[in-house]
Image (tube, rainbow, N blue to C red; front, side, top):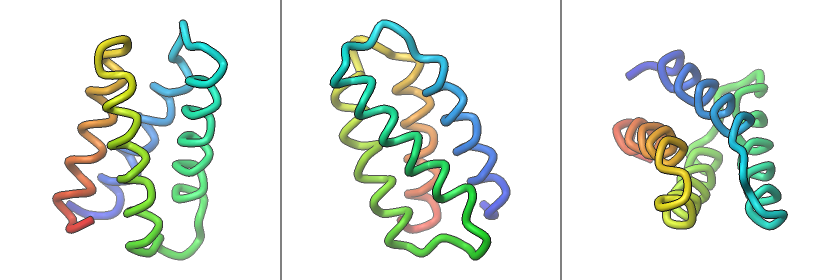
Length: 90
């Protein structure tokens, strides 16, 4: 998978996160932090390092565990992004 496919997936995930409703304050804060990190990766002029992707992967794992029951479509999008990161060795 090339960088543009990963970027497209992260863009879609970012949009999904923006549309997520019915969150308490803590959950909203966590997802806003995750959205900020996704945006940081997407806005970088130089290619992100493995550390950037590793951090993002760790956050996605955490978010999947937290929201698996309450937001299944959101966690499906996160799982897809995590699968892509795993596929490129992150």
